[in-house]
Amino acid sequence: MNIDSHCHLLPAVDDGVESIQESITLLEEMRLKGVERLYLTPHFLSPKSPTNISEIMKRWNEFRSELNSHSVEVLLGSEVFLRPEVLECDLVSMGESNVILVELPTQQKPHYLFEVIENLQMKGFRVLLAHVERYEYFFKKSGFLLGKTKLTGDISRLRDMGVLFQVNWNSLDRDPKAKALIEEKIADVTGSDKHKIGDGRLLIDFNDGRYGFFLNDYYL
Image (cartoon, rainbow, N blue to C red; front, side, top):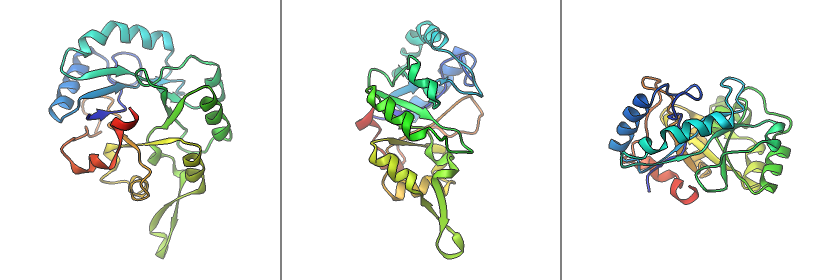
């Protein structure tokens, strides 16, 4: 099954689309590129885009029927910003699975990273780390004139813990960190992370052979 694991097409709830009309326009473009299942992943606990579970569920209940009337299976998830208080919150997993999409700060590794992930796992969740290529602290330069992007030991530790890695489709052409994850065969899932019409993020082209690098339909 062709799956986009990450987008912000639930209207009027975060920094994504503002109207159901915009959602449907993008959904139709995705359908033409081959998507069969789409996960809506509105931000939760994000310092840049505050939301709450009641608002997410209100919008989902308002729009779920219309979103699912376009020959694409649309399911609700969320993009959870990792912070210690997440352990006390009700969380929206991906569809009816135990997978939760988790976002990290981009500039500095949180000191509680491994502890909170381990506690989420103890609660029965499987953590899917969103757009791993954005987290500079997980990568280093090595080789001749430091031209080669390599993974740090933190990536290996997360892998050993059973954490899954999501890479944005838009990063495949231009981000050496995404390429390093693919070369090491630890890029599990891809998603468009589409927010709005004209946001510059590419939709997944499911006819592109690179979609075969990922196992979206195995995990989701």
